[in-house]
Length: 85
Image (tube, rainbow, N blue to C red):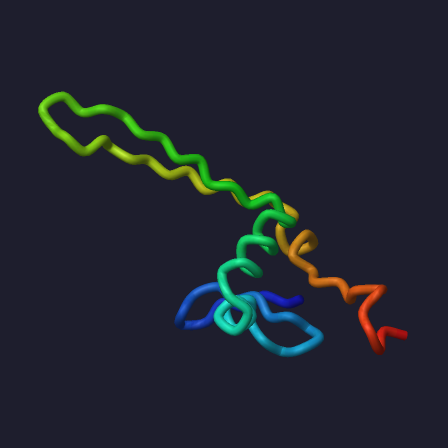
């Protein structure tokens, strides 16, 4: 996996396929994205606070990304998949 900063921001590319994680998640869906982020221990804490005089609460989001997220996001081949050496 390699990272690069381009005009669109940071992107991580899967070395085996050359696809970005965004490409992978668009192709395979949000379930794959959630699995990848859980495996990498990326978390989002949601905090709701009542605001007097307003029906809707104030919502704060705190995204926690581990410093070694690149190592954790490496997609390893499935040892039990068909055709795997």
